[in-house]
Length: 315
Image 1 (cartoon, rainbow, N blue to C red):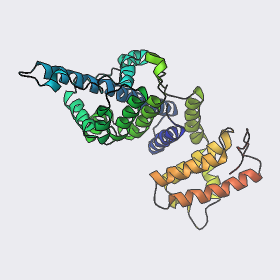
Image 2 (cartoon, rainbow, N blue to C red):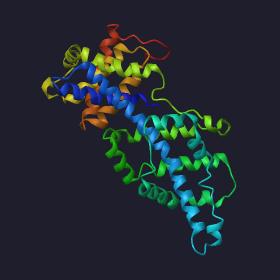
Image 3 (cartoon, one colour):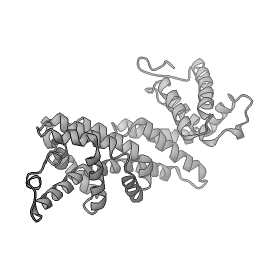
Image 4 (cartoon, rainbow, N blue to C red):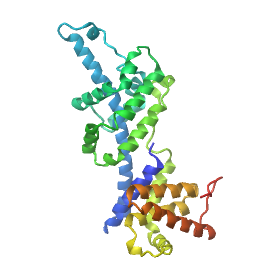
């Protein structure tokens, strides 16, 4: 499932686009936001389907070696540990994925060159040599190797990045999130579950989708009010000089502080400082931190911040 941080980033991008378009419609902009979030789940499923496709490619290659003229003993009796990897078999036969892959029109079989290059990279891993040297079947070893492939091969392959980016431009930004989802989901696989291992849904719960919608709509709804609140905390700094993205991030942070009683103050503060560091200017992290700190003090003194749950009020 996608993380709250990912939802904040997507909402930030959607709000920035909305603010830049005078003709933008809130409802259609929200629809586009949710569609962009769903596209990450499609990427997650495409990456899931890669693993059995790579194993299938290797199986065909081993079969072809048996048919060649004057095959060697190794050709006739190959090491099949990778192609028989129990976790990859679980993925291939998983009941949920058997429904989801056709639904999302996921098909790798026409991308033989890409699949071959990915297997070649796997084959070059020192971990591959160690894994294949032990011919004993061990589920935990199989899972550990699959996780190694996800961690070391998929993120670094430029051709895979390019291919997926060509299929959907959103996936360029979604790649890391989808990769993390894949890693975490496979990590949860259990041998006893067979082909019924749980496949993560898009959202952890309905609350996450609601969080995304409310954060988007309430930032728009309260933009003028929160801009004024922020302006009052500017010291020796004119409103016009505030970077648009910094203003947007502080508005979103105020929405979380005032409208989401279950989210701790410290979580909100840390999240938006991080987003300022990643997406805005070099000085934005310190600037956003300073303004939000002053706003939190005033909002607490005025009783406007109401947090429910133990430990949620601490900054």
